[in-house]
Length: 384
Ligand SMILES: *Cc1c(COP(=O)(O)O)cnc(C)c1O
Image (cartoon, rainbow, N blue to C red; front, side, top):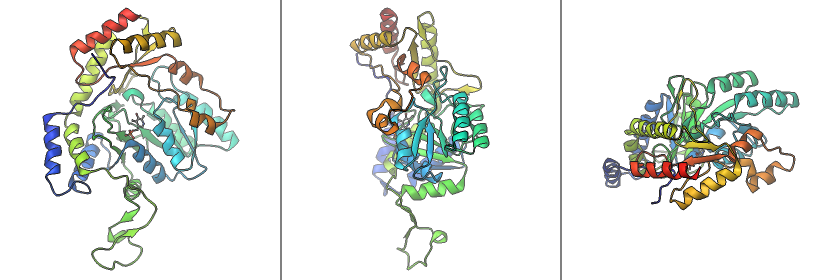
């Protein structure tokens, strides 16, 4: 048996959707990109969607749309994939980290307020804060939004894990409490396009900028031209953009996958409920979902109460039993690149440290078989 911690579910309809695209006129820059974008917008209740080649490129163009410039400060959670912080570095910004809430593993609004008050006194407030909806559970967005109003920063949600989750009854991506939110369509995430990502926003100005940045900074719409059109072929580059486009082939897959998002979320929640009841008597700390939120359960993360040795032992035992458990994530500031960047004065964050040395992600994905699930629970309970 070899059970991953997460994997994609590709249906016959998904395959047919991609094949239809392959036989059509456009493989890229065709109609399927907008169809997919409109479907995402509608699903999450945001006015605009700009799909791109990955969540990493989406984070990059989102930060540029928020006018993050060299020397600006961007704060995020240390418990995230490195791409969240890297995107800020691409803009020349300085990155700093806010400690996490031990219950939700999300950027803590309490720690954020403390850090903001200190930064205000020192004149070093962030331009953008990026909460990460860890494992699919939305961060405390209302509180973070209030702090944004008070201290004057913009909010970019890294919702890579969280398509299909809700906060105060609103789908993640509605941007009620943020400027822009970003999703990932990497195969382990909630839906997949192979590689792919998307920015959603209610601000038409941000949307226009991100569209432009996605494709070289080029515009073909006459009302944006600075000069006068020389003819039908004419286009203008107005800024320095990238080729961060997503293809029609990818969007054909994503559009078809999106039809099953409710199903994916429900199945993941069912597996999470089962884990939580079957592991209830053990010494593990089980994940909880805070009030007024639902989780997409991209990950099911348990914590060993006895700490690092117990976690390592458990990890090795499960791996030996063919269960590819994982750890999400080592705090970003622990990576050698960031250590060097942050310098010797950087203080490790106690909440992130305690989390890192105790967390382990169990297999959770829609096609997890009952026999596989039972193997995981059996291996886990006998290892404890
Ligand atoms: C996966 C992930 C990313 C990057 O997504 P890509 O689509 O692979 O670029 C960024 N942030 C978080 C939290 C992620 O899990």
